[in-house]
Structure formats: C-alpha cells, structure tokens
Image (tube, rainbow over all chains, first blue to last red; front, side):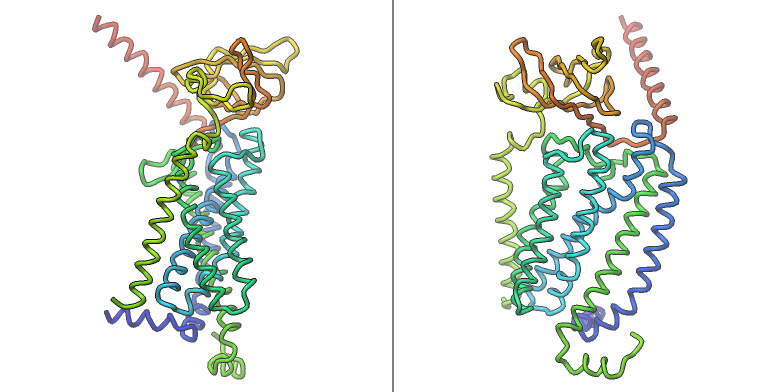
Length: 250
Length: 155
C-alpha cells in the first residue's frame, strides 16, 4: 500500500513534470543502445533469407513499427479508461501525448509494408483484412488528433478523445488476428506466444532489439510531448510560474 | 459503490458490448472478409460467377508451362483438395514459383480455366538462411523416403 501511495503522487502534473524530465535522457540512451545492436544484428550479422534474399531486411523496421502502432493504441485506450473513470488530469495528457507517435508508427508500418509488398508480392497495396485494418488504425489516430484539437476546453477534449480511443480499441485484435481469421495476402505471424518463432535465431534477435529501440523511442518522445502539454495546460498555476521565473535544470 | 468504480464498470461493460457487436458484424461479413477463394471453394460454387474474384493456393509442382511468347503462362492452383488451372499473360512476381503460395485475380471461363489479370505471390512467415532451408529440405526428403521404406517393409 505504501508503494502505491508513493506512485500516486506522480499522478499530479506538478510532480510528474520533473520526473519525466529526468527519465527522458535514459530512454534516449536505451533507444541508441538497442537501435545500434538491432541494426548491427539485422544489417551486418543476420544471414540472407532463403526465399526473399536481402529484401527481407525491411522486417527490422516493419515488424517493430507494426507492433508499436498497435501497442501504443492499447496504452492510449488504457489511459483513456483511467481518465474517464477516475477523472485524473494526467491521463488525458498522456493519451494526447501518445497519439502522434502512434500515428507515426502506423504510417511507418504501412509505408515499409508497401515497399516490401511490391518486390515480394508484386503489389504496393491490396485490400486484404490485415492491410485494411491497419489503415483504419491510422485513421483512428488521425481522427483522435483532429477531434481533440477541435475542442477548445482541454477537459472536454480529453473526454471526447477518450471515448474515441476506447471505441477504436476493438480494431486492435482485428488487426492482430486478421491473418488467422480470414484468408489474407499478408502472411501469418512469425513471432507469437502460441508457438516458437519461425525465424532464424539471429534474425529474431535483430528484430527484437529494433522493436525495443522503437519502444524506448516512443517513451522518450511521449515524455517530452507530455511535458509540453503539462506546461501548456498548467500555465496559470503557481508552480509553472515559479518554474518559468526561476528556471531549473529539470 | 463509489462513483469512479461505477464509471469503470460502465466502461468495461461498454467495451464488452462493443466487442460483441464487432464479433457479430464480422461473423455476418465472414464471406466478404476473405481476400481469396480456395480451389475447393471454387469447385463448390462458392466463388462469384461472371465476376472478378481472387483465387489462392499453392502453385502445383510441375504444372508451370510457358508459351512461346515468353509472357503467357499456365499453371495449376491447388489447396491439396481441388485443382484449378490458371492462364495468365503478364509479368510474374519474383517469388512466384512451383510449390509456393499464389493469389491470382481474374474470372473463370466456360472451360473451367481461371483467366488471371493479376498474379501475386503469397509467401509464408518462415525466415531462415538458405543453408538451413536446404538442410530442412534434405531432412524432409530423407524422412519421406524413410517413411516409404517403412511402408514397403510393412507390406
């Protein structure tokens, strides 16, 4: 219980702002570390593929970006639910801070998928269930950003955005299981909890490190963004005024 | 019950309801969610008549033949249950080969031949170096011959 109350205090924007500031450099460091290892394994160490030759190496960007596109949305939906249920101020700021990064990864997933699809499948784009549901995810992110930006009152914007984020979360299992439930051009998952990975080990490690790097990057930029949002929304409070008058290192 | 717990329950209930709605909608749409029909579907008359559709399966080993013009090909798509002959004039993707996945868009002509306008390669989710693939292939062949020998011995 004591740990919980300890964590609780960071739900206050004034307490979370300096904490986020201290965490950011660490996540940048981890991004560089994991990204370096991942790209080295993926581009220099991993062997060529028996079917796709060197072309398969786009997997080191594509899979991580696709995982993050789905995962960030789930995290957004989590904060949206917390915000709606407990009326916490920070939740809405978290949701808003995550959305642009989620949209970026979704775009990256679709874009690298197109670049991969053309040489391997023979088409930039097909309307199969996997590709279409991922495109809907991009529209959900853009819709969330547009909706929350269109409402002036931040608390009302948070609530409207939270409802959209929660409704849209039903799309996530559809994306993930689309290749199982329906016949698609997109192949099934190489890595899942249900079976051992159908990839050579060194390729798998490269992919996992690249995905970890993207995860750390997502945390770093979201923390930076949430700091900006906190300052903007709390600009009339005493602690922000004090911070601006007497700039500290945090 | 506190108000915030009530709201949390309400959100959970709404999500469950939403999931159910999505489940029923997609169950109803099931036939339209498929990107392609299998040869068995086509033989069973499930594929649309006189309309474009896609057929997907494996290119049957040994079925690929090239016409003299070098761009017209014939092959058989199979799902190990039924076989559908396909006729196509155009450029094939690099990954197209016998024994591998394929998805073709076109229509069935009166002779039961699928005339394709577009042929896409469908690859699987396995990634490995060529040496590993060869080793697997070899092990598979040895397994097959060993299995046959066992069958012969049993007779």
